[in-house]
Length: 371
Length: 126
Image (cartoon, rainbow over all chains, first blue to last red; front, side):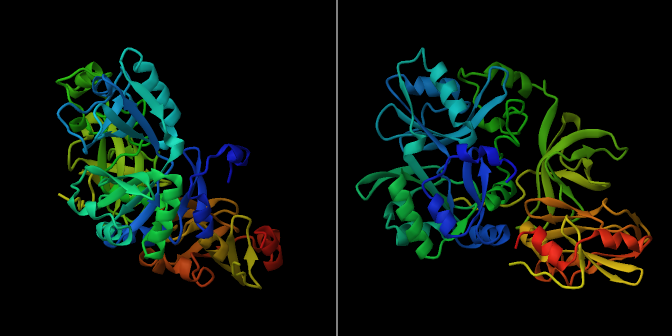
């Protein structure tokens, strides 16, 4: 609690009292007071890999865009291609600055009502994103609404997530949903978006609904034995699955192309940042994000230097753990592009010692998404 | 409530020292292991390395964070507890039973600057 003076400005999610009741270890994250862990990161991580866990992700931002030119507008600020993707589908991509740097990574939902889109953005970026979106929407006939404060969100993740959503909550619709699709259901007379998405590498759902509904659903899942999981294991899970975290693997300085997320950028349309990203794709890029595995249990942490055998520094670690599911020390690192090829020998300096390792694929864990 | 043992010396950075003549066993306190959570790795010096009072001699790693180990006394490392290499969780299970390094002290008077059990209890506010 080193930032006591900021505590008063911290926002609370609708589930804050539930976290306190569970005696969660709480910490500030992205302007919110959030649960880091309830039992232990390892236990919660394993619950998601082998059974089912639930996360309070009510801090995420919900921005609605609607109007006759909503599609054209979203396609103008979003790297992925939303034309031709129908209602009930979810698409991952980024918003970029003209220089290719990343404003945020986000999910775009095409709603069932024509010309309606939901953009789900990172908590730390809600204000910045909303300002960016509003500013660029000026030339388009569409309305932009930041509804983040009105929505709660719970992620239910793991091989038993579908069972929990159907049997505990009664959402039979879940069975028919494919990965990255959603449907609208009603709960206590209020809208609930049931989305087969997540950030763990496992099958699972994200449930967006009113704050009252969110608290009730949390309690029901908890009573049914779904493991409450904090942001600690959310990070270890997403990391093993090769998923980036804005602020670590994406930022105004780290473009989607540098982060190896070029498949989410579509160039047969115009969007902000396209020219810069095309230029980077053609090779005009200094560093690339890679995975590195080291032959030791020591843990490469964010900020540690990546070196060649002769001690020359060629990169920096962005996220690293001793992977819980793989029992290996692995990390993401931004390295000079000439050292980014698979199997390149690179070392990590950890405190006073240097640990040899090599470049490996960023997806350390074999994901188990619903087909 | 964290466990605190009588008869040991304690540092502000949550290491304990058990002195037997000129030899000191050094570990971390129960309070420290609770704060760390699941410990996954213990970075230790090797036999023959020098340690200095107030300076880093290694680190504990949990899933989420690493925490430096600060030596409460000066001297030469007689042994590191290699059992912790394969079983770092022993620090969580029994912090006072899991010494990390064994040091031949060069200045046993440094022990006088450390806290006793009552002082350490007050230090952690329990």
